[in-house]
Image (cartoon, rainbow, N blue to C red):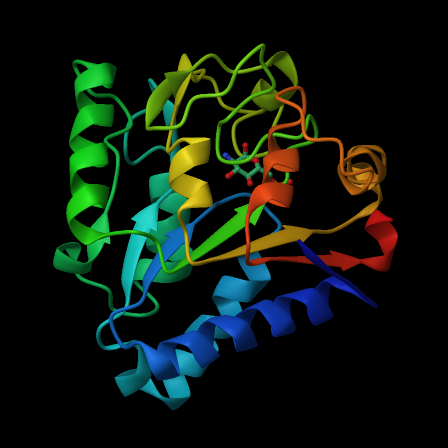
Length: 236
Ligand code: GLP
């Protein structure tokens, strides 16, 4: 994992957006794995600004939603779906044919994960996987556990995860998580791990100790050949 400590959230967002646009210049149909949450928000806004200047650059870009809050309605404000529609898909005019996404409330979550696994097998691997870091070290909804799962799965959400700002104030509560697996993440050609803010200090310190453990799922990124970790000063 290549670590870059930058001055501010704005700087990590600018660097991340520049890496993604640089990759798009080389591969027009780039498949972007898109995390949600507060950390990648500014990166997506900057990409949308770049789309305004160079729409052709984004004409083939594909997006895969990495994870979803299970049990919410797709249109609920807190879903990853609403987030990506608002921050990424609609500003960049990405049509459903270039978007791979979980349903948030499928009749059979395991079947929905199987469907997503099949979609990724056809479209993948991810060219670039944008990740945030959960306060408990999760990536996507791969939560700390005795063992990790390589593929898409229904996840039991940790208490800390249920307090996440996307859903903390929602009346309808997520029942579970839907996520791609750690194996799917590790097959991405490039991984961009974005970490910002003082709340992430403790978990970042643990991550930087390089102990690879399922208690800290993000530590598996140490095993990946091309992970770029962009941190701001507040997070270290
Ligand atoms: C949520 C999302 C993840 C995200 C993580 C960190 O659980 N499902 O995709 O990376 O939280 O979020 P934040 O960037 O808001 O700290």
